[in-house]
Length: 262
Image (cartoon, rainbow, N blue to C red):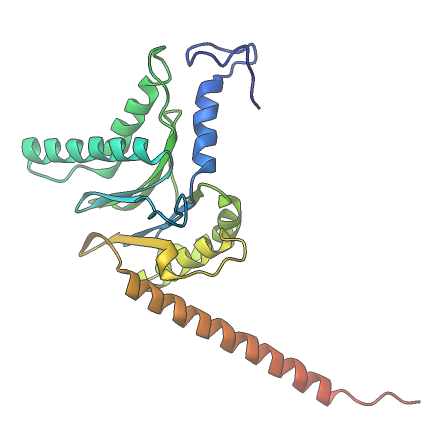
């Protein structure tokens, strides 16, 4: 992927029509901790993996509140994500001051995409090395957007970004058809299950993940660690019960089998 002839400047095109600096910024998103978003008709849930740089340090914050009806989860360079989340807050505050109404999610996402696109067309700037999942609720319903360092944005029913996000995408693709009818609790459980897919065998606990939710009658907020741990415990109990039931059924089938004639 890495070149040394056409990647010295963000405004230099390769003969194949590619901007390598933009692609490198998108690669930075893939190297970040996993972030997952999924939505129903009334709620949007964001979940991230908390990874510390070392055992002696705390993890960096990956979920930011923008307004009462909007929040973001990031993957990639946390410093860039922090700057962009501050920009989003300013946009929401300015809109509320002028129009005395909440900023629609789609309009905010376009402003963010325009800001990212400018950095792909100025030789003295670099692209933002962070991807943002924007969750929000407005008059048109619940929304989940992904903003890319290239300046593109897409709306999703469910999506995952960051390291080992493909495993989470595979899990979400199997189940997203029913998300629109899901209650808040089921969305949270599926978000945790998708996060678990990215851990590659590491035990899922409330300490290594952050979950936030926004919905009808519920402002954007991060769910406390104790509540998340209780949800994880209930999921594990249900999985163990299902495994025990499957083992019992297999034993019953083997005992009912007729002995072989000799």
